[in-house]
Image 1: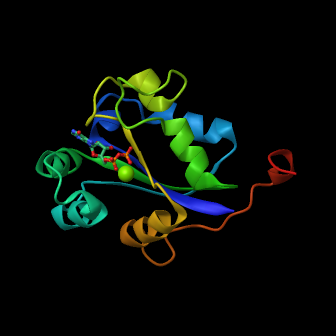
Image 2: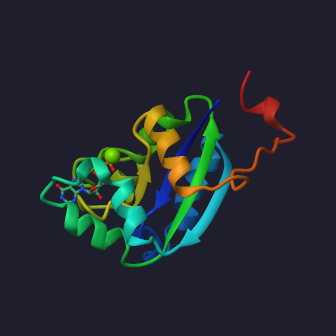
Image 3: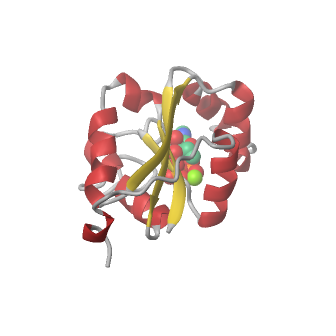
Length: 149
Ligand code: IDP
Ligand code: MG
């Protein structure tokens, strides 16, 4: 089992797409084990996107992600990191495949609705950044046997 960090970005929240996005993760068979609705502090945004600090779009990206509330989720399942990245789709909505969230809901490189950790290592780092001790809930689905065998 893996746990990955998902962020429903400001455009997703403002466009009232949170329910549709959460439904896609749930319908796939993934389990939500943490969630918080928040305005992102500038320092957290900069730490989260540290790998892009030298990119020309970094300033715009930090301004965007701190501009309006986000919903941060911890999502669990077999190969959850790769599965979520696949459901989310390619970075730019114009290039993202239909059937993916970015492919179906977006048409922008920056306003691409959903963040998902890109590797198990990133997931560990990001989960530690966004969630404190006890904020990820280890709970069992009573019907877990019907999701994986
Ligand atoms: P990812 O979210 O698919 O992992 P990254 O390359 O890690 O994509 O970029 C992080 C975020 O920065 C993207 O999700 C998007 O919001 C924004 N971004 C990436 N490339 C560009 C760009 O060329 N122009 C504007 N924003 C960008
Ligand atoms: Mg990335």
